[in-house]
Image (cartoon, rainbow, N blue to C red; front, side, top):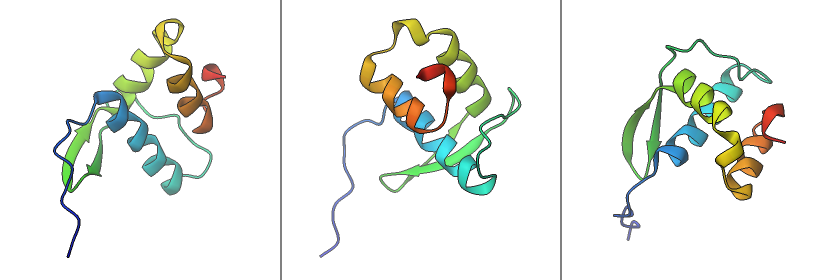
Amino acid sequence: MPAKPSSAPVSAFERGVAAPWRSTRRVPGSLTVPRAHVETVVVDGQEHAVKLGVFLSNTKSRRGKLAADKLQQLAALGLDWAA
């Protein structure tokens, strides 16, 4: 019996973190994307368009307000400014 998709809402941060992983797989070691770049990610069986360039720019500018666990997730993606 297949697992039911989660009905919990997916946060913008979760979608944004999922998007760089896709970019990293396509271009190893690269998380530099144009501000207008959009990635499509699938979370719990649903497609989401993530404005990756905007997400990275906004997250970087707000990094001082992010919780430590979120900064750790971003640092794990290879974002030096999150470390």
